[in-house]
Image (cartoon, rainbow over all chains, first blue to last red; front, side, top):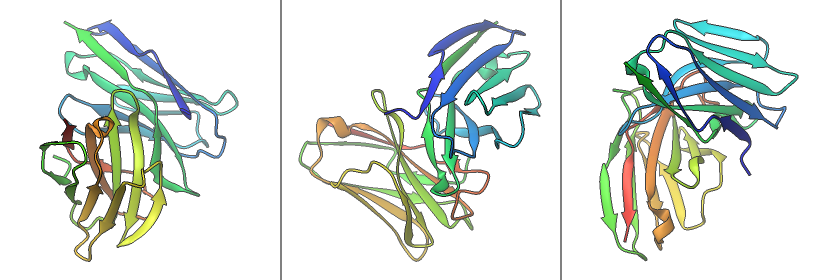
Length: 114
Length: 114
């Protein structure tokens, strides 16, 4: 069963717009929530990550919002650029297993139109 | 370039055969992870090794096995291959046993079983 549910499956946004991807998880033991970006033919690359003791983390144009009570977290891409066109994966893991034992969402394909 | 090297990049083999995928982690990284990416299952964690020892295990099939050698490179062995094993297999590495903050993925090995 999928422990991390991600939506939407795909989205199209105009250049300069905001892309929002949402994820929900069930296991309250998760304590590490990264987002990965994957381009065709490449491996996933860490974009930004958050731990449950903070509600928001911002790095450049990318922001994670985290709602512990709702067991949800989201990625906001501000001022979206054509170079942001990629597949984005949310993930979750727990230190008691290994933070590297990531449970990934199904992915969101983002297309930024010029 | 993540610094994680995987070989071969592409492999086509027949059902029932056995293949070995090879991974060289980033210089200095002691943890190696194997992930499988397929259209129906998404990104799935298979197994982690830390400094030669198995550290965490996912839904890895009994037909699959892995090991990490003293020079820290790792091999994933897939045997009695089935059509459903066709997928992209990623190796990733990190400095720490629990994944630390960043896990770096290689570009993957494309396996096609015919």
